[in-house]
Structures are given as C-alpha cells and as structure tokens.
Image 1 (cartoon, helix red, strand yellow):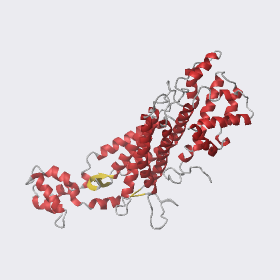
Image 2 (cartoon, one colour):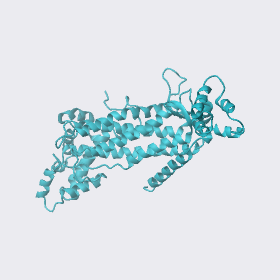
Image 3 (cartoon, one colour):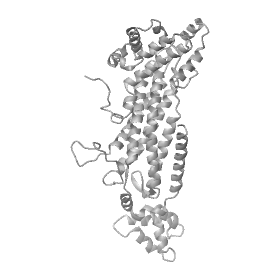
Image 4 (tube, helix red, strand yellow):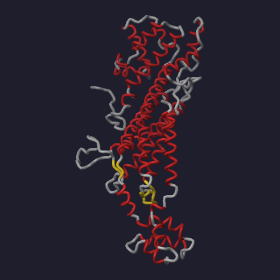
Length: 465
C-alpha cells in the first residue's frame, strides 16, 4: 500500500503547490541540500577536496532514497537525519566515492543543525509560492474595492442589520488584513542553524585548529548561510525557538485573514442572502447526493484552515516554552509536524483565496434588496443624531418611533412625517435624511487609504524584480 501523504483528509492544501513543496520528499531534499552545501563550503575553503564535494552532491538527490524505509528507521534516533546519514554513506560507497568523502559529510554538525536549517529552507521555498497567491488575492480584492466603491449594502453587527456601508469598504477591509499578513510573511528571516552537539561548535573548532590556514568557524558558517540563501545567525538557536515561533505566527496570521474573507463569503452566499457567489468551475462544488447544490468550497476551505491553525500555533509555542537545557527533549520534535501543517494550511488557503477573489460574483441588486428589509430604521442612528436636539421628547421619543415602526403599523417615514412639519423638515430634507447612500461616513476615505497602501506595497514589491 502506498504510504505517501497526499492530503486526502486535508483538502485545504491537497492538490495545491504546497502539497509538493512541503512533502516528505521536499523536506528530505532540504536536508540533503544542507549536507551537500556544507561539504561544498568546506571544499571552497580547501578543508576537503572538490572531488569529495562532487561525490556528496551526486548522492544528495531525494530520488535515490527509499523514504518509507527512512521513515521506518526514524524512531530509532527520534529524528530522520540520523538514518539519512547512514543511507547517504551507503550511497557514497555504492557510487564509488572517495572514502574520505564520508568524513567531510556532516563534519562538526549535529542533527538539529541539519533539521532546523532544512525546515527554514523548506519554509522559505514555500513562502515564495504562497506570497504569489496572496498577491493574486490582494490584486483581485483591490479591483473589487474600486469597482464597488459606491455599491451600497447593509453592514451587519452581531449578525444583525446595523448601518449602510459599501461593498467596496468590505472588500478593502479584506484587502487590508491580507496585505498586513502578507507583509509579515515577506519580512520573515530564515536563519541557518549551526552549533554542533550543544551549541558550541567544539568539534568543528577542534578540526579547524588542526587544519593549516583554515578559516574560522564564523566564516564557514557565514559561507554556508550564503550558499543556502539563509540568514547568517551569529549564534545557534537550539533552545531559542523564536525564529520558529515568528514564522508560525506569521503563517497563522495569514490563515486568520483569509478565514475572515472566507467566512464573509460563506455568509453572503447563503441562498436567502445571495449577495455573493463563488466562481463556477467544472468539477468543483458539487454534492454527492443533491445535484442542485453548488457548494462554496473555496470559502469552506479558507474557514477550515482558519479553524485548524490556532491549535497548531499553540503547539509550536508550547514546544518553544518547554525547550530545556542545550537541546530540547521532545519539544523540538513536536514542532516539526505542527509547523509543516501550518505552512501547508496557509499556503493552501492562499491558493484557494486567489481563485475565490478573482472569480467572486458580486450581486449588487440583491444587496439593495437585503438593505431594504430594515427599511428606514437602518438610518435610526442618523435620525437620532440629526433630529434629537429639536425633536419633541428628544432621543427617547425617536427611539420609541423606531420601535413602533418595526411592527405592522406605519413606516418610520410616516411616523416622522406626522411629528415634523414641512417648515421644520421639508420632504427633500427627509428624503436625504433617509438615504442610505448619504450616510456612509468616512467610507470613501478609508477605501482610498487602503488602495493607496496597496499601490505603494505593489510598487515596492515590483521594484524587487
């Protein structure tokens, strides 16, 4: 039976680019990349031969390894790097590499160095893809915010009709959250981990002490960081897990921002509301039992990711807070699957969000109909603010009129007209007072601000390429 994790039970990321970028194979390849890069750095410093570095590079290909066998051996050392090293040395022999190549392999390092660095490498690779999808999402939402700047709809507070807003503001609020979360991802650093057995590099320092004209361990570590395109951490972070908690927090923020987007679309796409609809795509959204249904699957999966991420984030923080001594005893091991699943959820959600935002159906006529359900009472806040100073009985009397209008009797307009003479408040003035489009406050300014931030962000991003 095939034991590969295809994501059958995790549809939020199954089939998206991250399913391959964060697979077991991708992580093992990242560990191989770190080991190979380290030998290459040594060769450049004449601490081993070019032939030895070439030999290690030749066997640093994941397709050469039986990952099921690797996984079965992993519990023997409580991590995958220990059996992988044995398998790499077997491959060196099988490829008739120089016997000395095995000595250069993993020289002065420890399993945590390789695994932590490989995790950073894998995360950095996935985030490049994730940011691309988040940019697609942001661009589509910016277009919606501009296109629907004046499309009036009802704002809901605690699930109930509250005041008028525009759909452009709602879209710009989604955009603002996603832009902020993406900005956190883009500012992440991915430090190399390199400290040896207990974070002192004692073994490497001992080796360098006996080597002729050898560079310092600091220089070699910096070279390795450059080779892997990781940040050069000046000190090891074996039990300082802030680099991982920072990454995990940023990933969880992405799922939260996208979750709000998805949850709003789920609500608005209910048939009785029908203000929004997901794009119709062949083979997507169908029901196994009810052919008339078009399920909002992209929104469902955004919500799925947002609901799943906090528990994983808590695991990463709990592990960080219980890292002890100079090497963690179980906390470190707990991080791996939690961090990877956070990575998968954030990236998978970004992929679905891009499709959703680019194809989102906006039904302005339905928005207008739903807004009319509350009638003139939707403007009760404005009515009280404008009329209370001169209205007989003040604000309490106006509130009583609003409550009276919610029954089967006269409308709020009629009740107000009975209380206000034409001289006090003309018909055109009353029309304006009860016009939802005339009570939008700073909506337009906020949309303009969010779109200006997006434009500046876009310009900054494009300047990097």
